[in-house]
Length: 413
Image (tube, rainbow, N blue to C red):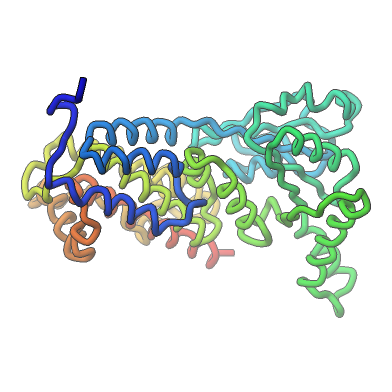
């Protein structure tokens, strides 16, 4: 039997949905998309048929997968290479913070230990015992560490990669999973070189020597030389950390890219912009799911809308590290007051209203301002409901706040 009229929304007014949806994802690099090409094609097919309910169902399932898809990252390597410090850096926690991975000069990890990201609950980093330690000989390591459960593997060394680590890479490759070689503590090597050769020290040449030293291990073992990521766990904004993050995002399945992108520290303005792009896609997907085809209403912002908007704004603030808890930690690090930090940012004041202005009036003013600046959604062929206008306003404001605080960080270092 065919679909009833209540199940299929065929209407001439829906004609702009397909080209606008297609155009939005077509202009985006595939490695940045948070939904798969298969999902995009399925949504387009439903839209072409005028089946809004079917399109909404596919989008709804995609959003659930994006928000809840588990990400499991294994971090391994030799004892003392900096595995735990790397995990703490990815989770944005210090070595003495609550829930931090144990850091020490001896092997601290004797069992595989999961560490949840404090803000992205679906992301778990697994601290694995060092390869070749007495309790874990190489022949038992893979089986006991349950390697089949991870999305990818980060193999860490603080010197050069040994045969144990190269053999591990071969085993991972045979499982058709990705691995990444990370050389840590390059800042210490640079400092040592600078101290020992103050007159002839060359930073660029020293980094290349470190890289070449790592690459020689692969050549000597007749293996293809992979990309080596040079990083410092204490300074993520320098060296190859952002390059590593970009590689991980690109190689992850589409539905897992969103949450992993949101987990990354605000180490550069480019990292902040990447979070913004991922959240923009999420906003667009929600808009399509809701079938937002009406023009912007001039009325109808209710108390319930305001409460939902507060939740959404807080979510953006948490992701970008401009929520109250994050500001308190930053204020403590810089030895300034939270109020002083808030003077330089705008998002904490977005939903504050003056005595003579109601929440509804204030929100409508934001809608009008956004429409005036962007020319409205007509350029995309899709009408957004008022809440999605506001989500964009919130997102843009929080993004700029994160950049302001990043610049503050640089100015104080």
